[in-house]
Image (cartoon, rainbow, N blue to C red):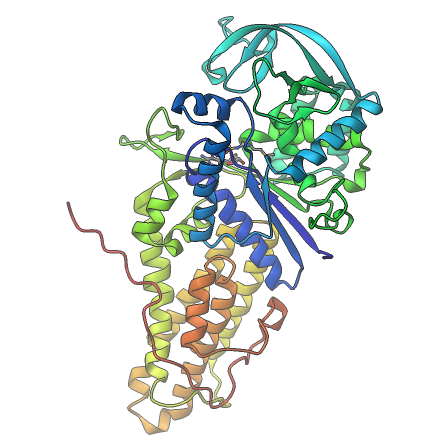
Length: 524
Ligand code: MSP
C-alpha cells in the first residue's frame, strides 16, 4: 500500500495486564488514525507488544510458568482490550515473531560488518528493573543508587556494544534542525539538554545467555541475546517491512517509512527514543530525511484519597484497570475522558468522578439532549429547506464554521482536548438556539412554519456535522447518531465534504433513542 501517514505506538510490556496508561496511548493513536482518515489520508497504524527482556523472564520464574506461555497469555489481554476499546490497527507487532527476529539479526549482522559493534568486558553495577548498566553519574546525592533503579547488582561480564557515541554530534544537529522531529516543542528542548550527557557512552546491546535466555540470539555470537530495547525499537521498521524475507506479507517498507508519529510516553523519550533510536537508524544508513517524528504524551497519575497526585504503580496498588472502567461505564465514557481530560505532552490525574461528570454533561446532557430534541421535533414532518433567515440562523452557522475550523486546527496539532472543546462549544450554542427559538411553541403557530422549519433544519444539520467530527473519538456513537438522523451517504464523508446543506429538502429523520444514557451512581 502507499500511504500518506504512518503512525505507531510504543509496544507494551505484556508483563501483567494493561493499565490506563497503555489504554490512553492506544486510544490516542486510534483517534489520530481515524482523524487522518476523515481528512482523506491513507493511514497505516502499527502497535503491538514487547515480549522479551529480563522482566518477563523474572515474572515467569516467579509465577512458575514458561516465559513464552506467559508472554502469549498476557498478550491476549492487550489484544482483547484493544478490541473492546475499538482501537483498530493495521499492523500488530509481537517481538517474538519470526519476521521480527529475522530483521533484528539482519541489522546486527549489517552493523557488525560496518564496524559499528565491538565486544568488551565490563565490571560494575546493573539495575535489574531498568535492565541497564549504571555509572557513577547515576548515583544520587547521597552516593547511593536511587529507588528508581530498583534492585542493583554487581556484575562482571563481556558484552557487545554499539558505537552510539560516534553519532552524538550528528544527533545534536539533526534534533536542532528539526530533521528528527520531536513534538510537542517543549520536549525537543528536553532532548537537546540530554544529548550530551546520554550520548557520550556507547550502548551495551547484548546480554549473556548465562543470565538471560529470553531474547533474540546474536547471529554471530550465540552466547548472547539482544538487549530488549535494541530489539524492541526495531519493531517500528521490522513490522513495516524493513529487510523482510522473500515472500513475506509485511508492508512495502519504502512506501511506509518514515513514521509520521511514533506515539510514546515521556518516560521513554530519553534515552531510548531520542538517543538510541535515531543513532541506530543513522548507523544503519538512514538519511536525515528518513528520520521519524516522535509524538510524546504525558503521564496519567492518580488522585490519592487525600487529593494529591501520585504515580500509578503495582506496588502502591493504585493501578486503574481500563477493562473494568469500560465494563462499568461504557467504552464511550472511557475513550472520551482519556483524550478530553489531558493536554498534549502534559500529565493529568485520573479521576473517576470526572469520567462520569464529563460523560453526563458534555455527552448525555449537551449532545444527547440536542440530538433528542432535534429528532423529537422533526418527527412530525420531513425536514424542509426554506429561505427563512434571521440573526439566529446566521449565528448558528457561524458557530459551526468556527467550531469546525478550531477542531481541525487542534486535531492537526494533536490537541484532542481542545478539538473536543470546540465540538462542545457548538453543541452548547445549538441548545441555546433551541431555547431562544422555542420550536415547540412555534409549532403551534401556522404563521411561523418557515421559521420552525429553518430552526429544525439548523439543529439537525448541525448534528450531522457534529457526529462526523466526533467520529474519530467516538466511532460507535457517531454511527448511532448518523443512523438516527438517517444520514447515509453512499460514501463515507471526508472533512472537506462537510459543507452546509448535507441534509436535503424532504429528508426524513429517524426516531430518537438515547445514545449517551446518563450514568447514575447509586449513593453508597
Ligand atoms: N516496552 C517499552 C516500550 C518499547 S517501544 C519500542 C515500554 N513498555 S510499557 O508497557 O512500560 O509502556 C508502554 C507505553 O505506555 C509507553 O509509551 C509508556 O510511556 C506508556 N505508559 C505507561 N504508563 C503510563 C501512564 N501512567 N500514563 C501514560 N502513559 C504511560 O515502555
